[in-house]
Amino acid sequence: MTMPKKIDSINDWIGVAACGLSKDAWVRVREETYAHYESAREESLREGASEEHANAAALSSLGNARTANKQYKKIHLTEWENKLMRQDECSTRALGKRPYLLIVPLILMCAAVAGFAINPGQATLLLLAGAAGLCFVFGAPFLVPINTPLKGLIYRTIRLTWLVAMIWFAYGIDGRSESWAMFFSMGVPVLWILTWLEWSRASTRRKLPISEWPRSLYF
Image (tube, rainbow, N blue to C red; front, side, top):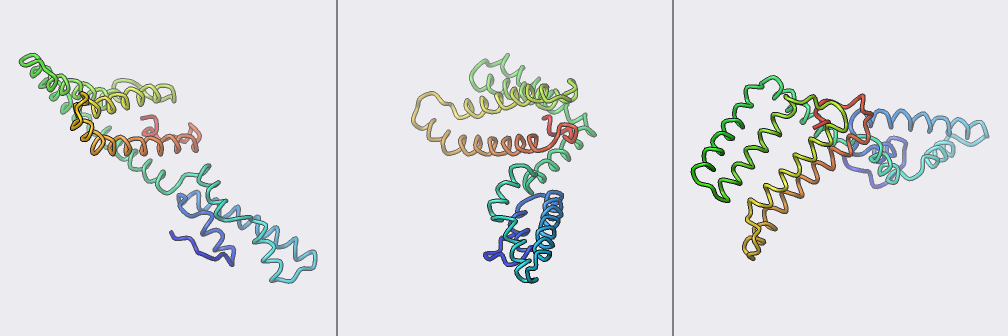
């Protein structure tokens, strides 16, 4: 949704103030704004103002629409946050209906253990750590009831620590300039994307009461 450059009506104001919000938030903002607008408009009319001046005064009483948009995004779900939450929820449900998929990380774990036993080294150790992390990431939600904010925080902390460690060691950060160049060209963008996604999920948790969290938000 694009913002109108000039705000001449209540619909223009709502279009700017609610831009980027989720559908439910947009409806809520629209209803609250109309109620405030009509109240201010009727008060001006009672005081003897003309229809045109009453409309202008009511619109002015709403304040700056762009400033309101920034404030609304701090307390309401944005379109992106709502989309990300729904995608996470669909993924969680899909995995919950197919627990047999857990055999994949288990097979990788067995292969990693065998590889490390046959040829211990940095590569096989990295593979072993990666397989163990995958088993935890996909297995923990089935083996442990992660249904409280604290349990969710512990799970996410372990998962993110593992992901960052894997990215760090995957690029062989050993002091060589070529290793650092590869890390900054490939590892840093991946870390930035992970940070952005986790920040969006954290923002969603902050805006929703715990009673309304879908199961995916705990992860």
